[in-house]
Image 1 (cartoon, rainbow, N blue to C red):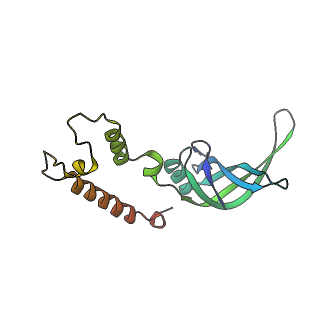
Image 2 (image 1 turned 135 degrees about the vertical axis):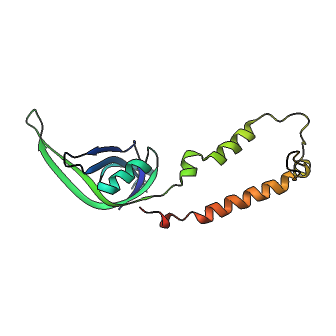
Image 3 (image 1 turned 60 degrees about the vertical axis):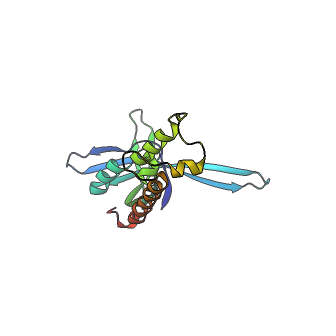
Length: 171
């Protein structure tokens, strides 16, 4: 079982028999206090491999930087390189994967993007300058007070967040 962040986008390939194989690397962090009392951090990079339907899902849903939980077994492969040296690699062959960050949080969903653009826009001199004036301002198109619009928007976001349950996702 590992929890970490992808260090690069997943790579999807197919075997000659048509089975999907997806590989990616997960970075896991560990913080501890050394014997000399100094706080230290270590990062471990683990190669992860998934097969068949899970491989296709990993390829579609994961990207560099996403936080994931993976569960599987260790597998060590050995081979001889073209120059005659023995090589080996240990990787985790997974049978379960869970995405731990939200897509909106990771990609900055369209609503968040619009909010940022609005916040970054220069405020005209004719706009209300105090918080109370801003709340009392009426939207010319809808006739709604800005305060009421904001409350509706906040309530809608809360409902969307409540509807999203990572346990309900098919992977």
